[in-house]
Length: 356
Image 1 (cartoon, rainbow, N blue to C red):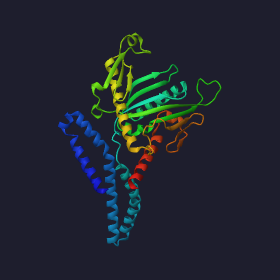
Image 2: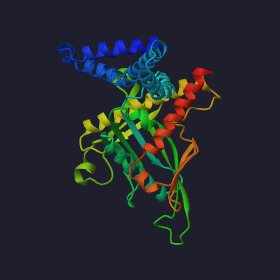
Image 3: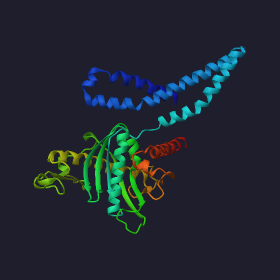
Image 4: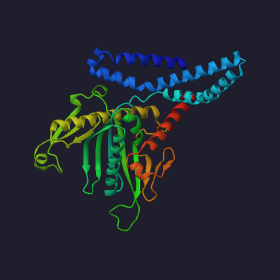
């Protein structure tokens, strides 16, 4: 493990030198790749350097105990050992976690799709609640949100809403949100005061670059049509809406949010690339995993991952058996108390697999 850590430290020093090279800075795409690589290493290097300081301190204290008879020095060395030795196990555990293989998509931006499931208007309203929750979470973390496509309802919800979130580590945290979210509450339209159960599906896709997905012009059928819904005469009279069909997979994406056909096409292509990659990765995962239980947060949309119970003010994540009586805080975007334990659980599974 120590040899691997030394290699990471050398790599980090090399990256620090490279990202300040004017020639590399001039090549923005390469510079951004190096910056992303540089950004993934500091925590590991920092923890390794901390480990070295602690181990050197322990070694020095033990040498003092072996070589001196001075009672004051002996007491100081013992105090040093009492302070440093309990830190070793924790730092070693952190290093093991930091050395675990990283999901290659973790540093990517994401495209999030929220769709109302069972429950009609109430499901659509809760889809709107989740959309606002993720917007607030993104705002808290300094991420940028861009609406790509939406199908709003008259009551203020969404039958479907698709949006992009851009920011450091967006996929690494939001990937655990994929799945079926269940809500239990009394709908505003319910006159009898009965609690209804509705569901909303969330899919979190890593946004991909052109080079990651090979989509040729002959793989696409692109149709344009007049947009429907609100937007005035321009929206309804101009063929600004775009529908793109990926012929090899029959994946269909539409976009009509913008008045410009080119902008709608660009947004639709971003969603399409993410969906094509997701389909390819799902096929590969199915072939490799088959009957093995999928890891937490893989995006199986048939799985109920979380319940939001309004009468009891609680949120329960069924994957790790976690219940928090903080419904209002969570819907206000304070998701870390849910996401951090999910990450810890996934890391524990990885460690167990590596060590077994």
